Length: 405
Figure (cartoon, rainbow, N blue to C red):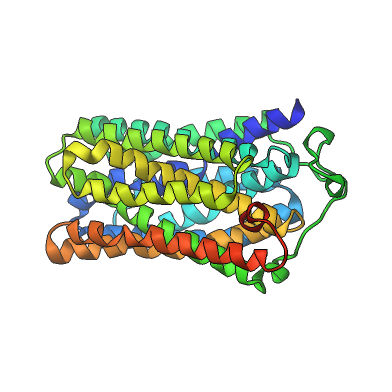
């Protein structure tokens, strides 16, 4: 029973983490902030890229701290300082101030995000690892949906500055209560009910970060997920503005953002359930095909925006589950948070460059059409890289399931 309460804590923790309250809903602030300051969309997108850069820099550090001091203590610091910095964005009055505080919010807030809660889940679960990671990351989808609604409503009623304060205080209160009631570290072996084999009786096990960095698989995984994140973050960040440019009303935009959150929720849960039963390549391929179709649907106007939003949300949910799963199965538990955090940091190059790529296309052509025509190629390349990782593991005598998962 205890492990399920901890899993609930991981779910809630991801629901109030920086990606849920800041990085993914940031597009909702695009028009109001750029209108007030007179910034171009490329300038505003660059702020997200600055945030993604600091995100990439802090994740390996967060992974080390979690492996060294435990997820709970690190998450307390991250929740407190991250939410405070998030609320302080309401005080920014220049481009430099906004970028600096954004970098601070991301740096502090990500001490209480993926490395802490994904790492904690894999220390309590093994037999149901896919499901545990799915439930943990589902908290992010629920948080994005809830905070996107809160942010959009607050901006409409009281302005963007009030939205940062309201969302920041709400995340702080929920996060600290959650850490007090549910989150617990596990420094011992996997609970008896979750042991898949005798090897799970000893802890720690697996490869070090240095070992992982010397493998071909680590870089194949990183490159594959980098392409996925480049495409989906680049598109989703601009989605509210893209829809508004095409004549969508604020309520339509909110509905499409909400359906994207529903897609993310579906992607995370469905992926986790499937990963415990089917080879990773089949699961990943299904969602990557859906991503490609999502981009193509957006080319055909507002009438296809709802299914497109659902598909793009689904891949944004699925890719975290798949990444967490392959890292755990391939490299083990010994340095999971460090390896996962480092892999994620590499992939965030896509989050840094994707929004700028789409913004530059818009600023030079006056629309996002060219970007939407180019993005469907990336899921195909990403799937090919996962296949190469699978083939490299097969060459060492591993099955397709064990290879990529």
